[in-house]
Image 1: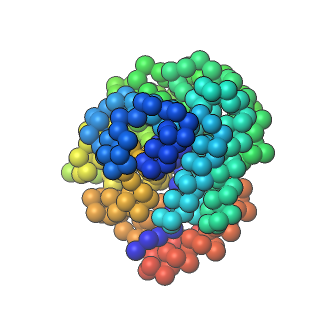
Image 2: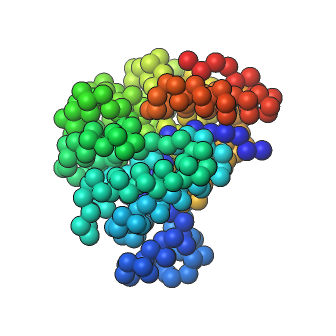
Image 3: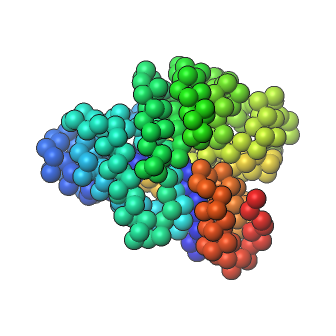
Length: 354
């Protein structure tokens, strides 16, 4: 059974079709792919055994490498929209750092324009509603430039700003000026935090919320380290965990990706414990190519390994839509026309979207 979903956390350069990667490499003279066989390339991109965020991210050199032309970016965006819509996604926010795609002369605006064109075509074809989140890379020093282009491209479908990339050693506060600029402009803010910060993960989440003003947290699973867990349930909250829960800060949880970067077994993932304890858990794919995943696969993981029911999925989807950076009227239409009826038909009690 495929249920409608809301996808808040999906990296454009982490979701290419392997065949498209090969086609683009051939068209544009990119000669560094590890193989020219589509099946072998699909297997090579599988980062489920990477064991660290840094190792997981290395594979992006090739997807970024074949996306240096406007036509390539447009094609990848179009296919991303079509692919997620085919798996029941009705609203998606795709994120990418435009600065990574300028090695062959594209401007930042041209990168965003190409992606927006692809998403628009996919939306017209499938009914998918979409938005763009502009990433800055936390290990680089151009976050102000990325923030400015994000603000200037709101008319192209940019709805938010994010800081992404390797987490350890790169606290969110390093990019406080960019975050302040974004917030002052009225653009929405979500930050990667608590994905793979190690001993600093909880502190990075606190910085993202309390200093940078993040409305959502990308991944955020390390908040479990500020909780006491007994017999699989959270029994006590630390100060940061309590703020995250009480403020109902949405956590953009991506289980399959988290297991790859954190070497977690399915039952070790904190999804179920966080959901039962009242945290605002949402579900996303992160990188559909590197994690070999889809939204139905993430839903199946939740139901198979963490006792998530259809009613829980309805709650998670409702919370995801409420946390989305699109207009309120769009949310209400998606909820009443496409999401609530499907969950009701599946036997759930979807509740009310506020």
